[in-house]
Length: 384
Ligand SMILES: C[S@@+](CC[C@H](N)C(=O)[O-])C[C@H]1O[C@@H](n2cnc3c(N)ncnc32)[C@H](O)[C@@H]1O
Image (cartoon, rainbow, N blue to C red; front, side, top):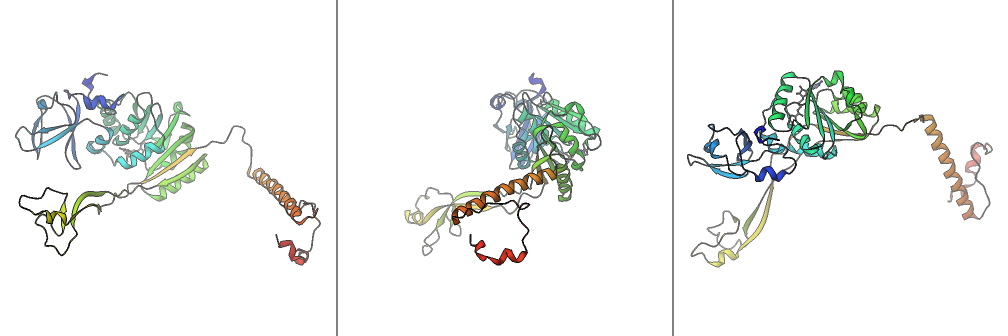
């Protein structure tokens, strides 16, 4: 694939290749400005990226290795120029809709058991955040078929997939999946199906036709009522192993600190309220005593902000009935009755052996009808 099309976002076949190679014109670069601050730049000679950290002419980035720290041409600050990955793309993409973020994407990819060569169906495409991650999972030999009923979003996704080099493994199609279902040509081809649209329950029958046996369906629904309706349909259409998950992650700040343990000693100049960040060399003139009253400790603070609710993820596996499956509920009940009969017979024989009697088990239908008082007339019958 020609580099003129830009850096391949799923970095196939070897992820290192893109990271080790130098930035060229037309490449997609993710400029990381700091914690949670990143933007996408397509490298064009003559253009300049301007931020609060200063001016960064694109020409100065050509020939630089991905991952390099770059100083602004006006000397104000610096940024890192990173190779694009689906994870970074999720942080910088243009939001045309709500999108999936890394924690949900990670669980979805794992539970749908995706690997190179898998075939996966998705609807709707939305902003293509999940689609990029799916493409990387299944590349280079697999396929992502993604369907979206908003035509403008279809065109935007098509262009992005081409520019980001995932169009060989990804095809986006304009289609109303709730109304028309997945195309018949895809019947029994999919290893996994992902639904992020308002009425997933309307698509379950079509998903059951599209999945191969054992394939996994995942639905992403913000409301629990939606989840319930979908589960009802899943059960009707041969899905089993159904589970619903909500991901709420907790982030931690972890650092090394020095705690002044001898509270009778005067507070060291190097400590603040008895604490000092990381162990430093004692300042010139500082006595060893102040340092010896400090104990190194690991401090971990859970951040106050919890990752909030995104949606409920419901996973289910298609376990179709075997061919010529004719067992009805009544037949199943009969089987379990005769199973009980066998257990009762063995229990009676075991008890008879322990009592040393030759009392045989008689099936209930053969046993003479006893008045109920007879049942309790010999309490010894219950001693075992
Ligand atoms: C929340 S967005 C999907 C976001 C996507 N998962 C991502 O990570 O970027 C939902 C999308 O489903 C599309 N959609 C809604 N109903 C649909 C239908 N019946 N058929 C196909 N797409 C549909 C919407 O137009 C919208 O773009």
